[in-house]
Image (cartoon, rainbow, N blue to C red):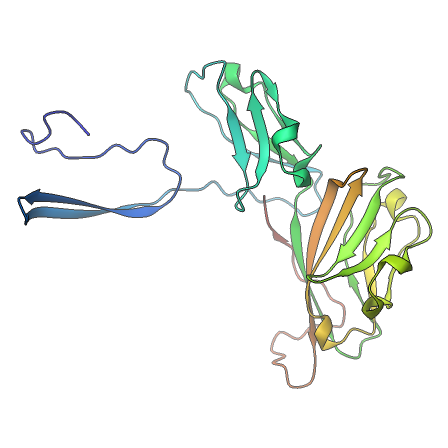
Length: 255
């Protein structure tokens, strides 16, 4: 606040580095009596970035005119407060980032330019797939770049268990739960980049969120995607009914 604020009557408050929208209340007391009170609603405008779900990378822009000291530390975090990227002491700090972002992020030469723009490789996207119970099969789509590393491991999971594992050839049925002995992937998924999973004879209890992760070595995640599956059965509201196996438009979720 400003000095000698009571004399000019300006009791404005300066908040540095705002991080969230909120309502603030200022109250002026004289002894136990309220002389004046005011509420101020602070709304932060968050830049919206939208990209197609199959792009190779996305840029999260942040440019500042501040003269940043060389010892400054820059941290990018996602909405779960996981560390996405760290820059300090003149270089990136990959050992401080969450494993989900390993080998997937980079920043510009920020301290000299003031450009804190952050690039995340491979967008995390959520597809919605809807199918009728009794259909022969449904595909959970996941297409990415071709020629992924030959030693990469592909795992499809639901919220409770592992449902399909691909690690070289052939698939690994011994590593999946028996409930999901109805799954298959295309041949040479790492070469083609088509990591889609086919689930045969879908039933209502199959509805839910499925995730697919591609990792190298000690769980270094290089690709990741989630698919929301809805299996319509008798008695469900079908006002949004679609042809069996049809995909809805992708919803992009940035971390």
